[in-house]
Image: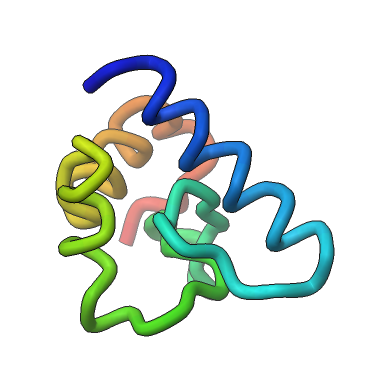
Length: 79
């Protein structure tokens, strides 16, 4: 994925969330209630999230969450 496309999606989502709006590309995650996995913070039309991500050259949200879980295992509680 080109850094400029990823950077645009990441920045856009951060700005929207900071303004109290819903993010578009699901780049901003948070720990779920159980702290066993990351999950997407407030996002518009979740059913079409992967379509929007693919249009920007981003991978699936499922893959992104798996990657974040693998990158930050110390933040997760093992079930």
